[in-house]
Length: 430
Image 1 (tube, rainbow, N blue to C red):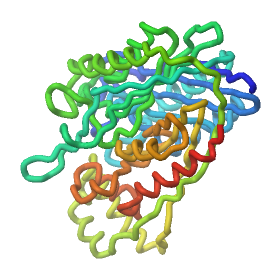
Image 2 (image 1 turned 180 degrees about the horizontal axis):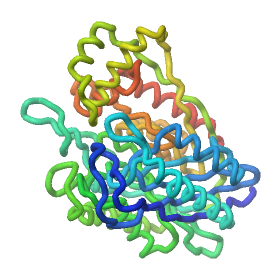
Image 3 (image 1 turned 45 degrees about the horizontal axis):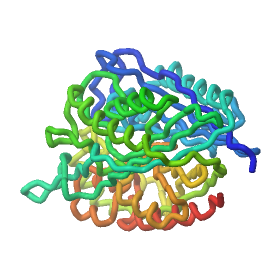
Image 4 (image 1 turned 120 degrees about the vertical axis):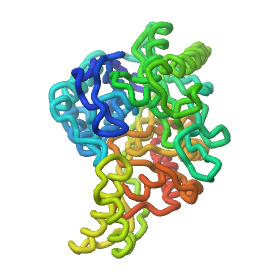
């Protein structure tokens, strides 16, 4: 077996003070830097196969921009574009590189001068620093997160904390070392929103930054956070909400840091590993468009809204009306590219969605790969992806799921994603 080569590198991608902070609405701008944002690249090579995973401390990464960056990586490093995983950690106190209607436009100056160049530098350095390496997979649990779809006394779903709701407590740490046992890096996988800081005007990695810094201090190497299915999971803040302010970042980050450090201390063995990359299209089933008259009626309610979910609804109903006028024909499925990077017994699975946590757990339950880690907000940003049982309850995430595209996904699209991903995992063949 050829040696697995791994290189790890980091670049600072902190924007200038005054940038729009993305995640809530377009009128929130930074006034100070609490902690630097980073692009952290893990490069893998074995034989002729190359792959890279980059953890980016931003909220979301626009799909078209993600594709552009992957092509630039291929052009400048030779790593195939479809072998790239570009992941947004989902901090809500970072710059706008998503450009979603209702949340503001992409910060083109930041993207062109800091963000994209920083990513390319990190990937090039990681590749140049690749050495024969082995990996260790350690697993534990953390209560840093909690289901955030709170059900109030009026039987309405609101954003808060739902102690009986589904969330995945599993935290996985993949540690990488060279053959002399020198630490190279740590990949920390867990699922929870980066919203502790709330509407703060600080630039910050939010709670995951505290965790990453702790692992680096105690175990060496370069650590990075890769967020799992977090669509319905918020941070477990002592105020009982899913948002707070900068004073609470250390609180949730401290819980996650303690748990990650405990997991890193496990005496799991380092092993040599095989590398494979599998790329497939998920064929996600689509529902039919809503009727034209319904779209017109709803458009009148939302047409003057331009911010957040109400802005999204106004745009959606307007797009549906336009689709009837321009000859749009309903499609049966929507193809969505999925990249799976498998390193030994662990598989990293890309999704350009904010997945509900149960979807990731179901995939892992039925996967042939012992450690299957689904990544939200990866290689694009295509909205929330929910479970069928939650649709009847409504709420913010459901509204987004139903109004992100002219044809929404079918109510049971989660089942289709689970089964197709499980089949794709069988093709990894390590």
